[in-house]
Every structure is written in C-alpha cells, then in structure tokens.
Amino acid sequence: MKKTASLLLAVIMILSSVFLVAGQEKTYLERAYDGEFKGKVVIFDGPFMDNDQVLFEASIKDFEDKTGIDIQYIGNKDFESTIQMRVEGGNAPDIADFPQPGGMANLAKGGYIVDVREAISEDWLKENYSQAWLDLGTVSNENGEMMMAGIWARNNAKSQVYYRPDIWADAGYEVPETWQEMVDLSKQMVEDGETPWCIGIESGGATGWPATDWIENIMLRTTSLDNYNKWIKGELRFDSPEVQRAIDIMSELWFTDGFVYGGREAIATTNFGEAVKPLFYDVDGCMMFSLGNFATAFFPESAVAGVDYDAFYLPPIDEEYGRPYLGGGDVYSIFKGHDRDEVKAVLEFFTHGESLKVWLNNGGALFPGRDADPAWYANATDAKISKMIDDATSFSFDGSDMMPVSVGSGTFWKGMTDLVTGSDVDTVVSIIDKGWPK
Image (cartoon, rainbow, N blue to C red; front, side, top):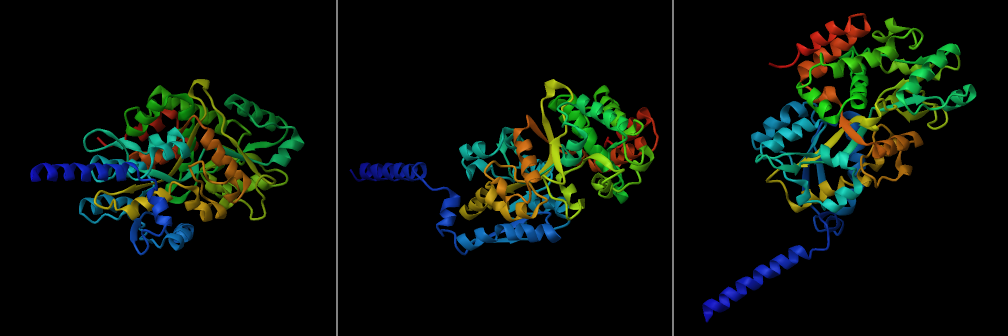
C-alpha cells in the first residue's frame, strides 16, 4: 500500500512539474521586467570598442535600470581571434557577439552553444525576423543536426546607392529599377555633361575592399545562393565563369569613359570615404555613390537625409535571382553551462528593437527585426534602408568577410586593386585563387 501511495505521489509530482512548465505564461524577458532577476550579473563579450561600446552600453542602460540585471560588457579588440580558444578553455562569457557568423558556426559544431529556441519562442522569432535572418543563424551542431545558434541584434547594409533627389528631379532622372536601366541612366548622364559615379577603393593596407562589396552584390544578382555560398568556401573559384562574369559587369560600369569621377586612374588612389564628397558638389560633381550605410559618417554634417540625399536599392540583374541584399551584422549566442534564466532573458531582450533604440537614434546601425519603430532611426533614409532589407528576397553576409583571411582580406583585395590599375581579368583571378588554403 505504501509502495502504491509513493508511486502515485511521484506520478502527481511529475505531472505537476510538466503542467507548470507547459503552463508557464511568462517569457524570460517578462520575468526579468517583473524584477525576478534583480541583482543578477550577465557577462557579455564582443568586438565593440570606443564609440561603439559607448552606444552599446547606452542602449542597454534602460533595460538594466528596469530589471536590475547588470550586463557587464568586456569589449575586446582581439575578440574574433581569441573567443574560440577561451571557450574551449572553459573561460566563456555568458553571451558573445560574433561579427562574423563563421565563428559562431565553429563553436556550435564543437557543441559549445545553446539553441536559442530554448530561451526564446520560435513563434516570436518568426514574427520579428525574416526567414533570411533565421537561416543565417541556423547551423549544424556537434551531431550534425541543425540548430538556431544565435539571434541577430544589429546589422549593416551594402546594397544601396546614394543620390541627390533634388538634383535628379531638376534633371528629370528617375530611380532605375533594373541594372540595365542604371547603366542606361549612367550613359544619359554622360551625354548631359554629368559624371554618374563617385568610386574610391583606397583604404591604406585594406585598399581594394570596397570593390569586393561590388563583386559580392553582382554575384548575388547573377547566380544562385548555392553558388554564392560555394564561392565563399572556395568550392567555386574566381576563375569560374560565374565570378568572371561578375567582374566583367563591374568593369563595364567602372571603366567606361566618363562614368567615374576622376576616371579609372583615380579609383585606386581615392579614399573610400573621401570619394563621396563630389556627390554634394553643386556643379561638376557626381550623381551616384554606393557603399555601406556607415557611409553617412562621411557626408557633410549639414546634409539632411531625405532632402539633401536619399538612397535606392542597387537594382537586380537577372530576374530569376530576385532582389537580394548584401550586408553584415552581429549575431549573439549563449554558451552551454551559462544558460541561466537571467541570461536567457537578456538574449530575448536583444531580439527587440528597443535594445538598439539609442544606437539607432545616433545613426550608423540598423536593427534586423521588424518591431523597431521607424521613428527611432536617426533619419528617414536609414529607416528606408532597413525596410528595403526586410523586403529583400534574401540577405547574404559579406563574402570576403566569410572567406579565409588569405583570400578575403588578402588576394581578393589585392586582385581588385590590380584590376583597377590595369591588370587583365585572367591574371587577376589567377592571383586571387592562389590565396586559397591548400
């Protein structure tokens, strides 16, 4: 009888436990705002330094004040080169910010990262993020099974063109909807005595990187995502027809007489940030400039977004590949053994636009989720770019950032610089391909 009673009590306890978990109505974030985790400390590490660190800490202050959770940010300029060693050595932070998803993928494959769906409702993730962002956070775990290893908390955009709407209106120019329309518009501008483009790739030891963004954008518009991913892994070489076609398309735009301010010979010696200045000349300047959304840091302080400048989507080329977007971002992960309730609450907080509100107000950042109020952005153009990303058919991470260093920030940069300064395509792709690790 006692044995039966004990067994019955055990079953009731198990059922009660299951009921409490299944019937839990509050998320970890809601529990945090109820003060349940007051006094708890969460260690966060990542690459933010200097002004970025100031903006990050300003963005989380309201959350810390309301919840009593202390998010202690470390900040490490060598984060990317040391995080794997620290995690494998048992010295992981609670949450880490990976500016390149490859680092997250490596640690997930090693069995060190928690599936974020253990902390955050998958329904909420699907509601607030496009599938492209969810896919970018999904990788293989140690068993070869797919897991969602991180959430995207900040991003940048590299598929837009800046222009002067008032100047265009006066000239009767319309925003191009296709690549060919953009090429034709460039020709029309030359006929009208204007210079279509401002382009510069000089960046000290990193000279050439802006050209890699152009090649990546063109690849996304002329071949499949599968081929793009093979390319960044080295499975599709630079001497392939797909990559050579992308180089040819860029060359047509960059090297046609009259298309670029200062001519082809000025591209490699013009600093990428300084290159935008002629866009704002009243006469004898240029009409278009393409760079990541951080480019606005180089715009005149007096320039008003939506009035003195605006942006349009860098047009598609082959219709079958839709309207892709290129960019980068920061993906946050929790490590195994650190998945405490307060850590889960903090990670959930970072899936809300509110977590980046202060940074958005200051410019230079975008939020990848849908719940960020457009009014939070520093200007209407940043909000417009964020909407263009959300409307894109795909979002792909900067290819050169995903390639091995010997190629991505090595022979790829050099090869693009050599192309601009006169090397032929066959020589350039041969040099770049020699950078792949054997």
